[in-house]
Amino acid sequence: MFKKILIANRGEIALRVIRACKEMGISTVAVHSDVDTNSLHVRAADEHVCIGPADSALSYRNIPNVLSAAEVTGADAIHPGYGFLAENAHFAEVCESIGVRFIGPTSEHIAMLGDKAKAREIMARKGIPLMPGTGELKNEQEALEAARKIGFPVIFKASAGGGGRGMRVVNKEEDLARAFQTAQAEAKANFSNDAVYLEKFFIEPRHIEVQILADEKGRTVFLGERDCSIQRRYQKLLEESPSPVIDERLRREMGNVAVEAVRSVHYRNAGTVEFLLDKDHNFYFMEVNSRIQVEHPVTEMITGIDLIKEQIRIAAGHPLAYRQQDIKLTGHSIECRINAECPEKFTPCPGTVTRFHQPGGLGIRVDSAIESGSVVVPHYDSLIAKLISHGQNRDEAMARMRRALDEFVIDGIKTTIPLHKRILNDPDFQKGRVSTGFLERFTANPSA
Image (cartoon, rainbow, N blue to C red; front, side):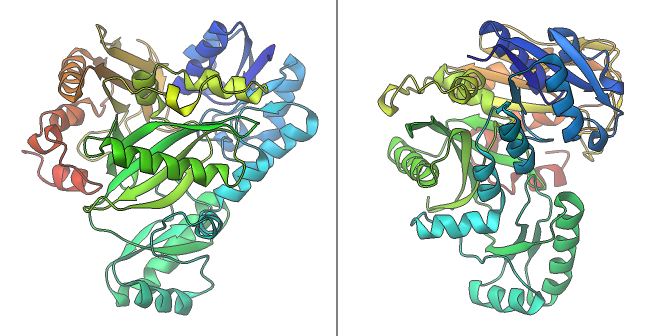
């Protein structure tokens, strides 16, 4: 087992990894920018190293600085969390070359699956059900011909993308050229790669993802699914597990397809296979996320499996300690992402947290690195806390979440807590009648 792990991230996910390491008896190193010097994750770690200024390109995404911190502290492994360097194949490759274990998939798998268009081609060869679509597009004319064949509406996606960036929906032919150019420009700006591809755009599907774990010997299991349909501009806001519309037969079918998808490329460590589910319960592969997900706690709550610890054990060469039949789902879990944003306009709201009181009680978990007096800076993602509930069933999980949202106090800045309260009280959400278009309709009528 590793003796010392450097966490190449910040905020709640860095603190989450530190806590797992402490329980495993592993020393930790926190890296931080100069504006994060007094952050909770820095104080919780055994050691800390400042790696640059606030700009993440000069600190958290600065590969030489992160690796120098690992070298001077003697860390033998690096956990990237999510975001920043988590899906950077070059970073993983450099770690491999200098003998520092990257806690995640291999650089080869990150590169292979990080190119969404190429990942589609791989899955097509393996017989995995795909959305109708294309490989990387060379020009507007090729895009137009493909769109006519697929049928409108279609959606452009960045080949190197994620997080909703580089995505544009096209409803009619005359809008295609502009959407193609915009998607390319956004992909180039965010991923230094302007390659895009097309997929059929389904009206109001559900977004379902399957959590998998795979060890170095090829043993692979799936840990149920997460319903991530509550999202705005492809950014997830609320997730739950299990999905309220998936029965045991469909769960096994999707899980087996997810396992086959990653096993076919000899994938290792934690990952998520993402699908779209249409109204007839047909599901289609979208992509593989080769990292831990923001929403991993809901899976932990219903399985009792610590996914961060499993990542660490797999990276250290340990085999999975269980088989598929050992995975049991118990109850229901919901996660609300608490962002430092104006809940009406989703605009960032940095500032000083003057009072922070987190909820508690049976079935409630809070993952956050915020406390009273914390300064939410404008340089990073607006996520400041994850509120997770667990109950014997969905009704109890919702009741506990509503109670916890009422208890949660964050003063000094605006947050998305009021929006989550509205969602939890919405009759359609309570009955599980949601889709990826739910939030747009919901926020279009603020009095609902």
